Every structure is written in structure tokens, then in C-alpha cells.
Image 1 (cartoon, helix red, strand yellow):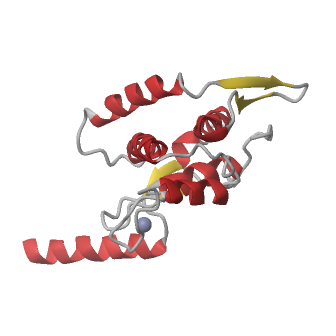
Image 2: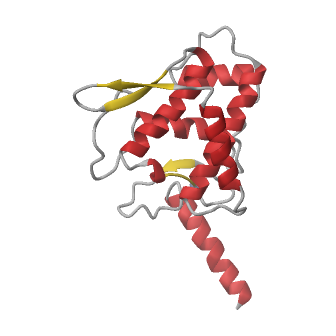
Length: 192
Ligand SMILES: [Zn+2]
């Protein structure tokens, strides 16, 4: 998370966005993605892929459950960024959850002449979860946090980085966009 670069245009994906999107996209979807955090081994695979704490021998099933909960809350925030929250209570609930668990995964500020970054204060799985909070803080500091979204196609729901100039992207890619406009077109035909 050692980046201090100010966000330029075009906005670009970075280690921080990759980390969070990779984590959110461990969830299953109608597009064929399967649940990747169902057990301890799944969590170890994600940790390894993300270059985090994979060698922590203490990784447990409870950690995988905690990871799924954390992922659910982050996903709700990313849905809110895309303006697709069905239940108005879900965002405050996710925010309250994130406030609560953030206390378990503290960060340490690392100050330099160039700026300030946050690094996890712990190692192992708590450090890995802390790295997700550090990544979110990094994106927020660079004005890019709201660009992390969940695709509005209900059969996809993939996390993606919105690179549109005015942050108006709703779909993870052209395929989902055209699938949804085709669906809307057909429903307009049906309703006459
Ligand atoms: Zn999509």
C-alpha cells in the first residue's frame, strides 16, 4: 500500500483497487463465479493470490467466515457506489459493521515527505484484513473510493473500477451493458 501518487486522469486501477476488487469478486455469481471463501483453504488461496499472510499457520474456518462477512459489507458499499441498493437499511448496517470490525484490524500511519500511507499494525489474517482497510483509505485519499462499484447486471454483480470520466459507469464491461439494454428493450416491447 506504499503509494502516494495523486489520482490523475484517466483514473487507473492500482494495487489498492485490485486488492479490494479481487476480494469482493471471490463471491459466487450467476455468471459462473463460484464461492472462493467457503473454507480455510479458500481463504489461504485468496491470501496467496493477494500476496498476503498465506504462510500464517493459524488460518481457520472462523477466519473464512469473518472474511465472508467483511466481503459482504464491502460489497454493500460498492453497490451503494453504483446506486443499486434495494434496502435502505443495508448501507448504514454495513457501515456500522465496518466501523466495528475496523477496531480489530488497526492501521499505522507511515509518514514521509511525500505523504502518508497506512499499513496494517498486525500480521497474519488480521493484517490481511487490515490491508483491505488500508487499500480503501488509500483510494479514498485519492478520490477514487466511489469508483469501486458492483456491476448493476443482477446476474453478474462483479466488482469493478469505474473508469468513466464522470464516474457514471454502471456495468463491469460492455457485455453486461448490452445485456442489460437488451433486457430493457425487450421489457419495453412487452409493456407496449
Ligand atoms: Zn457485469
